[in-house]
Length: 299
Length: 242
Image 1: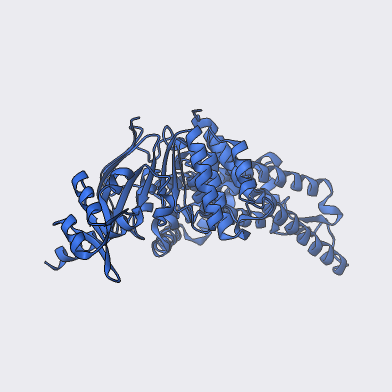
Image 2: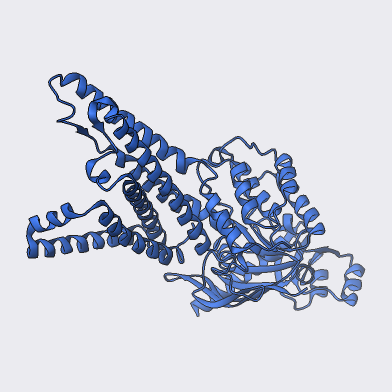
């Protein structure tokens, strides 16, 4: 498949604040990537630099083997519509889509029209009079219909209600199946986008915490439910990410998957084995990293 | 996947400026309204001043410059609103700037043509029969209406670049530094004026201005216009779209 985006030792500082700190990561082509992390983790900064809208303080970014900043050979192949995208005040959605159709060589007008109908987007209303959800829909329609080789969706769910979000996920998957391309979705609603994403990059305080396939990540942890002494028997010295008391039972999430013998032992002890949701895992990993950093700072 | 040529993308950046008609309609309204107000004042003065000899005492108004200031604001709006949107369309800054400068040039040519037509109308009708002139100012028309049009277009180009560059300065340096740069430029201009006056006196300075033909004015206008063009590119290369 090849690599679409390569980021090496990338740092971005705004005065004394480091938005990105020595980030090295790559994004495979024709894959849906989840770019996850808490507020201020550096997700938008990373996407901005890859999309050529911002520039690194140190390190380098290559998109299809070339530097993106001011590079017309690469830029038309990327689309990055911000969640808080600024439009011309008097523009209506039609104006914006016309502009996008002129800018993107692969613009699919039929798909755009279908999405306009799906999202019930009022075409005669000025964009600055649209609701937040409708503005999100405008961004989502540009992102899908532009059919750019690389498309970034920065928190696309903001403003969309649950039904509209599901519609977006459905249309994204449908179109991706027909026209595979590199898609990077940044989101807080991790479990909601979990079925979409094949690869995960988790940022925390400007650093890469996780860079692996979604399946591998899911296998990195497991939840056991049952009596505490039975759970202890199975997990051994594994790191406990989370422990909840459920009456006489406990629900324990541990780092590290179970082997076949351990799974058999768990069944023997009448323990329930539950997969860990990506959201839980990401929260645990972020919290653990945060604690590690705090400890290191205090030391 | 289809490939986009730089030329087609520059054209797209040019079209982007005219997707909403504001860049033409708003200055157009100011042009017509400013002229109408000037005419209203001319006819009022003509009606009140019954002993006035229209040929010996023609009336002149400066309302023809009103659309220029409006265009400066519209160009600033291009920097503040259209530029961030252009980044969502993945235009490189140089392509966006090329399309924008082409759009400013088109608007400037349009302004020059409208100015000439208005001045020609005023000359043809002897200032609407009462010798009231808003566009056919003797100095501007002294070398013919062709030169008048070029001067008007150059002035338009200059003020649009000025508005656009100031916004780029703000986007690049922030509010405080923008004001510091503006103050520094004013100080430099004042120092240059002071030095000139010290050497040749006010009469020398005004004499130089008075001796400028419209064609020479056009040439001098090109100097800051070129400086602003280069400055706008230097600034937009590292200007933040947010």
